[in-house]
Image (cartoon, rainbow over all chains, first blue to last red; front, side, top):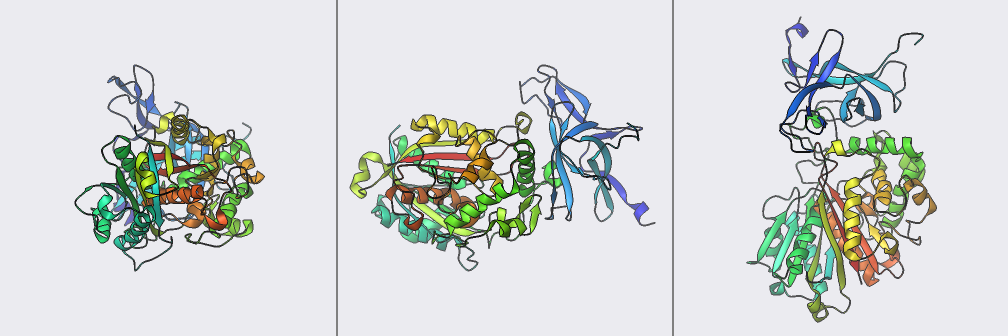
Amino acid sequence: MKEATKENISVREGLFVQEADKAYLIGNQCEGCGQVFFPSRVFCFHCSSQKMEPIRVGNRGKLYSFTTSHMPSTHFQPPYTVGWIDLMEGIRIFSRIEKIEGQELQIGMEMELVIDELWQEASKRVVGYKYHPIVWPAGH
Amino acid sequence: MREVAVIGGGSTVFGKFPNRSCEDLGKEAVRWAISDAGVRPKDVEFASCGTVFGGYCMGQRVLKEVGITGIEIVNVENACAGGATAFRESWLRIATGQYDVAIVVGVESMTTSPIAGKLIEPPPDDLDGQLGLTVPIFFALMMKRHIHEYGTTLKQAAEISVKNHRHGALNPYSQYKKELTTEEILSSRMICEPLTLLQCCPNTDGAAAVVLCASHLAKKYVSKPVMVAASVLRSGDYLYRWKDATFSDMSHRAAGQAYEMAGCGPEDLDCIELHDPFTICELMHYEDLGLCAKGEGGKLIESGATGLGGKIPVNPSGGLLSKGHPLSATGVAQVVESLWQLRGIAGQRQVTGAKVALTHAVGGYVAGLESGAVGVHIFKT
């Protein structure tokens, strides 16, 4: 019962969106030079254009590198796994990584975004994004 | 720009001194530097001081202990590149003709700092930091990718630590002063896979100082001045433009500018003090400083070329890994080591016939950038 009373809050507002079966990060793209940013920027750091269009990014990506930390950080107790994901939209982001039972992580793996609880605070459940390896259907 | 000479240097032993204040550490280094240079306190016209955790007016607090007051004193903070930044600040004031004699101090007491025994907390608006990114994670990610792309081995990375501890065992100013074996390094506690504890620099207290003057005055003070041939300080670029995380674009650009300024190349260097907070950093800096081709860092350490007696000894002092890393003192201590090497007084760790030395300091994890700052300096006899 106690669990159910916890309020969900986002790690930061406007960072991600969960649709029926797919999650996306919300970034923006410069209409001038095409550079993609996540999180969104008020103007293009690349060509200084003010014309920025919001776009959904990062549903899928490839694992560029990963590590498991055996040191604690502000919100996480060890061991926890993190990595850099190369998004299909051409940028690299840092994220927590959820391993899949019985599967070793490998650089180059196809990864998928999930919206999930990151940590809990006194009366709140802090929600953010993570990536996990894509599990292909049998016979794929 | 006028030519600038380094005419004196001094350093405390590096280590853990919880009962010593920053003033006390700084005073020891400064007194040695000014007596080494043969200047009187009243000859010093300008001072720059680097510290991260020392607090306000650190330079004034140290220099009042040695009779230096009433002059222009600038305190700088640039994370682990703070010492290199302070050095450049004094160099610039003399090179541009504003002053003739200046002193540089770097001082840090990590054991009494608010982060003693902890990792540095990310600011609340650092999203990646909130998501669990720490400094050792950042470098572990680079290491894993370097291994993936170039077949670099864990043994090659550990050899960096073996070498620097071998050098540090010959340095009375080093924190560890102890040789370590490959096995000890690889089997030490895991920090961030595949970085083990003995591939990470320790927490350290210490201070270092150097005295600079306009080159035409140098002979008035010392018989063997060392000339500053290049001084470069740069900040990191956006991560979205940093495509290859196995290679530091920031250090590569800064080193290129320094070589151009000094009119020399990596092949002309006799010894190097570079930023090795983690083993993988030194291995990567072999590549971005141009000591070897991209991806060849593992082979270079294996060849023995970067050890004492090799073609280009790197971190003869023991580097951050063995000598220790009192953040802002590090960049100044690198200059002190280079001064001793170029004067030929570095004792058992002397690089035979050293005439050209390079120092390289990197500082500051900044969310969204490759890094905070890099300072590269080249010195010639």
